[in-house]
Amino acid sequence: MFKVDSENMTIYLTRGDTASIIFSAKDQDGNQFHPTTNDCLVFSVAKKYGDEPLIEIYNKMTGIEEDFWVINILPEHTENLNFGKYAFDVQLEMRDDSTGNLTAINTIIGKTDEISPQFILWGEVSQESE
Image (cartoon, rainbow, N blue to C red; front, side, top):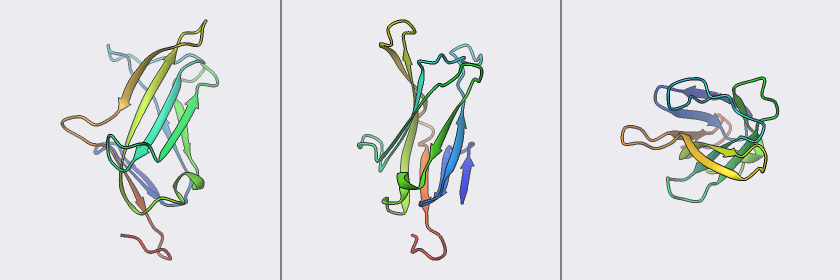
């Protein structure tokens, strides 16, 4: 099972399942962000904020004709994790088009005073889940 509750910033996934999540970004003026081929989205999951990531998925833009990234969570990303609640964030790494040097890291989804995005890993009926 896979579900995204965008209002509460919560992702639900059955351990070992596959999921594809589409992300886009807006600039500081609220306009659609148009990524370049050097921009990379990083999806990270950790037990809690401040811990080392247990899952880190990078998606570099492969074509600039689309204004979104697809993050694919594969079975091997979650198969060794325990059931339960985790923290997640999504960052945009921006690089200079001519040099490829990192110029900025912007958090697109992350912890704020109002919300802490959660990644909840469930089990199937045949698995023991909390």
